[in-house]
Image (tube, rainbow, N blue to C red; front, top):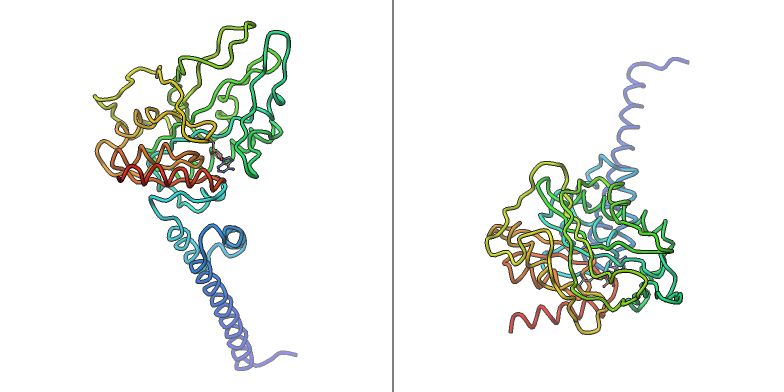
Length: 321
Ligand SMILES: C[S@@+](CC[C@H](N)C(=O)[O-])C[C@H]1O[C@@H](n2cnc3c(N)ncnc32)[C@H](O)[C@@H]1O
């Protein structure tokens, strides 16, 4: 039957009150969850945050909780710290367009690409790099590795400021006498490739007689568009051309650090004397952090291995002495 206007109104008020109470309860639960997230140590709640983030982004996009959780993200990531976190999980904690400069070198997936230390009569194919611990990033299925790198690059793209730059160190790998060039997956990411710098390592342990001795790696300068990024080549730059001659450095037990000259040749030209934020999502032995401090900038870093984070923090402490 038809109900009266008064009954309808009362019914409507009743329903909306229930909705408000339900919403109020949901917000309280989310708020308490947020407090718990702040209370616990960052690294230990990564999984919880990931779940909360999924809920936020997928189901309650427009609620106040979405705002609360994004504030928490920003609070969780402090400047001048290296977090024990997976690169992509860590990147997801960083706000859009908040980073000035990314300098990084991922694992190259040598074993996954080539198999471990395969040998023909004249050639030893690339040796694998064992990062130790649980990290098996050098032995992934190659197709998965490239998809991972594309996802990684797109997260870097998101966190980078409009006029920011990313310097992505990788190399041409050879398998069955056929090369694989990183530009193949870089061009599938959102990035614009502005320049390719050649890092001449000056020598190589690979002295196989089946080809010219491979002594180079590449540094891809990536930007968000084809407009000029924040950059003015410093008059003091150690390398002014697109070929940088730097022998590889040794850093304690880390198997693959890049030399400090690499970030040192970038940061002053991008910072131009200002205190910018430099991110390295594969921080390794802390070279990017050391260079950021040396050049008066802030840094953020991620790595999966405690041992390398300790090594980085030790290098940073030694700078202060
Ligand atoms: C090529 S090294 C970086 C070296 C660094 N540029 C330096 O100068 O010491 C790559 C680093 O990535 C770390 N790593 C591997 N997989 C990772 C992941 N999923 N997330 C974060 N770091 C990772 C490894 O532990 C290793 O220290």
